[in-house]
Length: 401
Image 1 (spheres, rainbow, N blue to C red):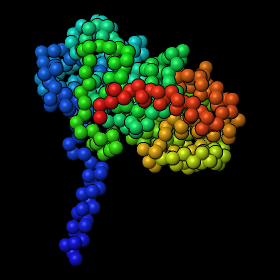
Image 2 (spheres, rainbow, N blue to C red):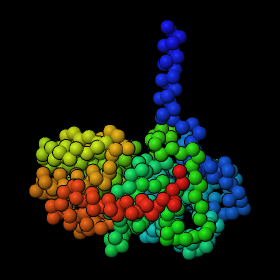
Image 3 (cartoon, rainbow, N blue to C red):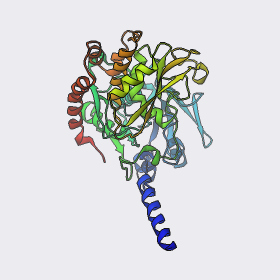
């Protein structure tokens, strides 16, 4: 009997381990070093990255390449930068760092005079308005313009890449938070997104994606990668990263999205929100894959860099906390619309701010005007889904897994 019980426990443990672990999985940067170093032989290499450009064990791509004797001549960093100074120091080598945010959003011709091939390796969040997708697109365009090779190291998405949602970008609302022609939630890995952008728009014949090894999109990010590295100051956990696409639209409203708390993009509220009314309105939608509970919080400026703007500093905010209960049922865009409708219904002080900045985040004014005109959640989602479905069909030739 004891042997039978032991056997059953071992089988159960093995099945659980197999479900949540993929030991053969490798990120694109690892596959670049292991199997594709010939692409970099005798070439000067520029790397577009930040602190998230790591393999599944947490080792950074710059360290990996320098240790492999690759001639890394320059590092380019997106919004939020890479390090406190303008050099990257590794293995006794100092590599100059050029920012691609602020005064310019891509490199100049002079910036890449000492570069033959550019490598992109950054963790993104599956949402068009997270600016690393704009950095990808702009640097891809300029790589072609300046006759440079461009390599993207693919990596697992923290989002559910089976899910594509939201309105397509209207060029009239193009900005750095909306540069690529996709729905709000694009449902692709960064390598697949880059392949789509290159095939449909950039058309650089010196472009290549280094695929991941044995990637399974049904396995969560946290069961593929050994640790979470914050891609920006307010994305402080996997939970924040997953919920960011659902709460970022609040940046264009009079409601706090939780910046300046220990749970940014997991809580929302303001001094004037009625938590009970908001909670009831949200629960009435019966959204799948998430749960809501009442909360209160006080934004603290000391928790973020001084340049980061936040609402209601040191003021008690009332609202709700959101938790992802099933990432494969969770619909970020649908949730974001539900949150906006519920807030508008439950608070007379809810409003759009910063010259309708939400239109740039959404990539169109359709969402704002439909909410203002009383459209229901189902009507708005159905309208957006028409555009998302067309995009999903268009991207099928660029899927890598």
